[in-house]
Length: 100
Image 1 (cartoon, rainbow, N blue to C red):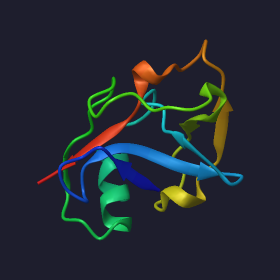
Image 2 (spheres, rainbow, N blue to C red):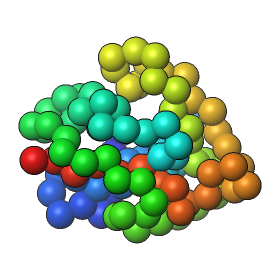
Image 3 (cartoon, helix red, strand yellow):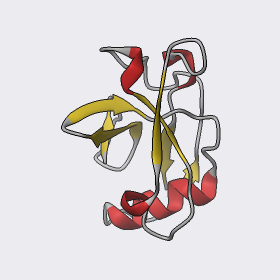
Image 4 (spheres, helix red, strand yellow):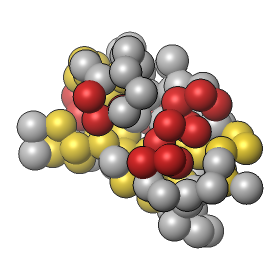
């Protein structure tokens, strides 16, 4: 996981690497619980907000790299992911986090 365009190392747009390619994380199922799990993994304090939309700017690259995360485990890296096309989750729905 990587946070992009934030003002600190613990805030920004959430990006994830799947099969060697980086893509943005879809905010469809993204919430404060997910953000706090990610912050723990990144050794940050705790998340105060999990904004959707394109709060930290829209991601770039192919929209088929836009990822929908299904959180089923306490470590986000172990969750199954599905690559989605532009019609289901465009970059207008990039997940973000903001730390305390």
